[in-house]
Image 1 (cartoon, rainbow, N blue to C red):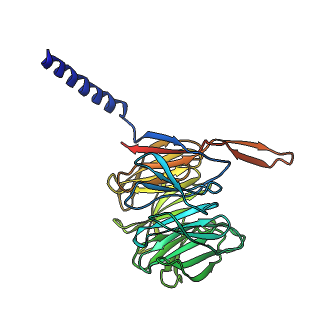
Image 2: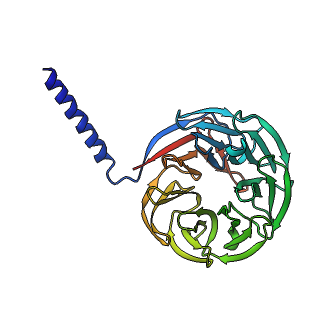
Image 3: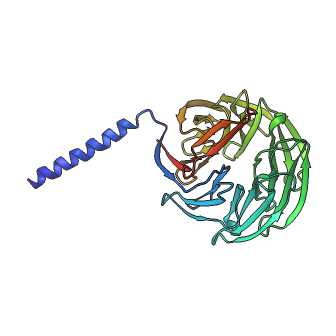
Length: 348
């Protein structure tokens, strides 16, 4: 009787496992969890994970910089004095966190305790968009958002937050650059369809390359020595650039209104996310060979994405909203209270 029970239980377990695999057939990613957080009528921008941990930092503008533990699936803290949070940068090697803010200030905080260190006013003409770390110079660069005529980079010592210099570029919009760690920065000028090659010590331009669209995302892929980039606009696509020649070496069409990109080296996948709720999954067959595997639907406005370096899980954030028009025809969008959600998708 006991033996039969054991055999039957084993058969049920095997059957359940087979059914689970059958349910996942044809999938690229599946939704693992959706966790709602307390929220107000607040927009959001970048989400970034502290390297080597499960702490995901969510820049939630009015609601501040929220720390979400992806392993526990819950929010664990909000950094003090972080209202207006837009672009976090997390540097455990210095026990420092920084966040670019919508009022043009830069907040630095102790990464272990999350206690603020200082909120430094940098730009008076609008908000800061985001920041990057250059390991070759041990500096960080924070970049302004869209401007009428020029973009400004604020360069600081990564360990202390001391402002070292200010550099302007004659471009209205510059997004996150790719950094190879060997003295080169590859900076996109979105509205000009350009990628600039900069010396990381001086930020002097040594080359500029025309690209086929409004480039908004760039990543350095060390395994192929390529710049992986993606575009917004009427011709959304992902492409690679060979920095030895400056030539676009491959292109592939992606979903519209991209705002996130991740590279899964284990599965040789490149993933892009869009404001329309589409995730394009691309197979990388070589440095200059790509093929679209498929499209995963998430939720509208889940444009920001972060790929967990530990397991390649994808994290997205979004919230419900209502959009109306006033008497003049201007649209007004209001986010619903307590509708902000963190979505976790697991690769198959």
